Image 1: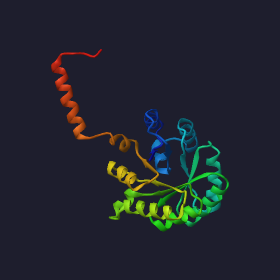
Image 2: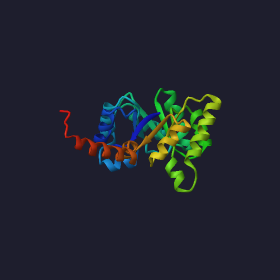
Image 3: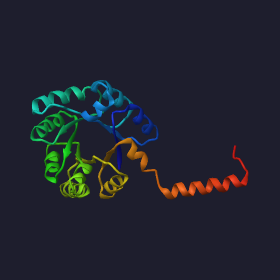
Image 4: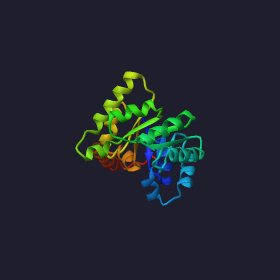
Length: 217
């Protein structure tokens, strides 16, 4: 499974990238706002830092304007994935931009029907939002499973990018189901290393080592 980092904070991306934990980055208007940076400036900096796809989202609502914005974002770097919403206008933009050779990430997906349309429109990535479905008492993982089956049934090459990942359980469940990618905040990715038994075992080792009175260096 590929790990995309869901943030526009360059320092956090760099830390994970240095550990080999970054296969790409996703941003959105909310994350750009949180960063306090200019969208073109910060997107360019991120794209220079990582080798994989960097999703940069359009903010227009009609297809022609989305296409215009998408083309400008795609010019930032060769690894930009233009992010468009899963609306009818977004699907039109996806088709044009993907036909022009751009990577396109279709976001805000909440149903298997939407995912099917995105694949047919040539999306590189489809981003189903797990956490937001869980918020309204629907099973986000069931959606990932349904999309996986549909895409496998017909050989669609669109990659399933599990988004709105909020917990470590979301991460491993998406991996078990077969999502191609997950995008998660840096804190969730780092939390995946935690386990109480690891901590307890380490504490015991350190206690026993102190009793030996030895040093390695």
